[in-house]
Amino acid sequence: MIFACANAVPCPCKYPAPIETALKWMADHDLANMEAGTYELQGQDLYIMIQDFTTQPAEVRRPERHDDYLDIQYIVSGVERMGYVPYTGKEAVDEDPEGKDVTFYRDLEGETFVDVLPGSYCIFFSNDIHRPGCAAGEPCAVRKAVVKMKQSLL
Image (tube, rainbow, N blue to C red; front, side, top):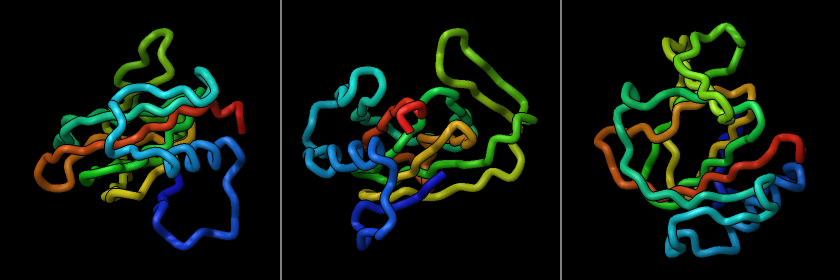
């Protein structure tokens, strides 16, 4: 997992080109005023979903992990708490829907949470179990951009 802020002083280290492409696309677009929906950058290999939702208590949200795609979850407005725990392969699977790139988990140990503010983002790889959509206190409205990127691009 990487936790960073688009408003920080630029780091001299660079992300791989596909991640840089996605971050630049978000910086070049008015995410706050775009229509919610899916925007393809490289077909199904790299696309961005603009989402509006209300956060919920963490116990209502399910931890998840993806095999094929990494997520960049960028907060446009509101505050979202996101859970994280490294994937060891020993976690209890709650559901693994056939044909979907998602596995849900239960009874996680050692999960930590970060409050993600506007302009900040988390990058979750296939070895990261994450719990998005959690309320940081009271539930609130959030707008975020979720980049879905095939890890094979890296």
